[in-house]
Length: 47
Image 1 (tube, rainbow, N blue to C red):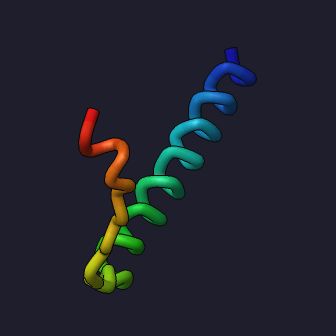
Image 2 (cartoon, one colour):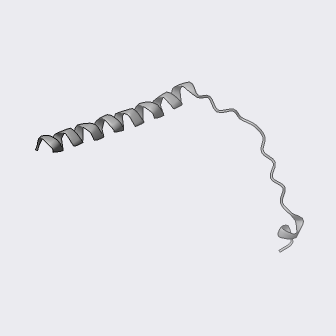
Image 3 (spheres, rainbow, N blue to C red):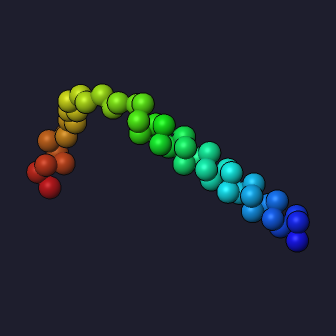
């Protein structure tokens, strides 16, 4: 039973680290907006 408890604690710590990293990305990283142009060939439009 102690090994199961240790495994669950390890999983909880890893999940906390992942969520903490995602939260840090949300707070500190600002996305850059830019225009996107996609050229569509005319032969695809005529079908």
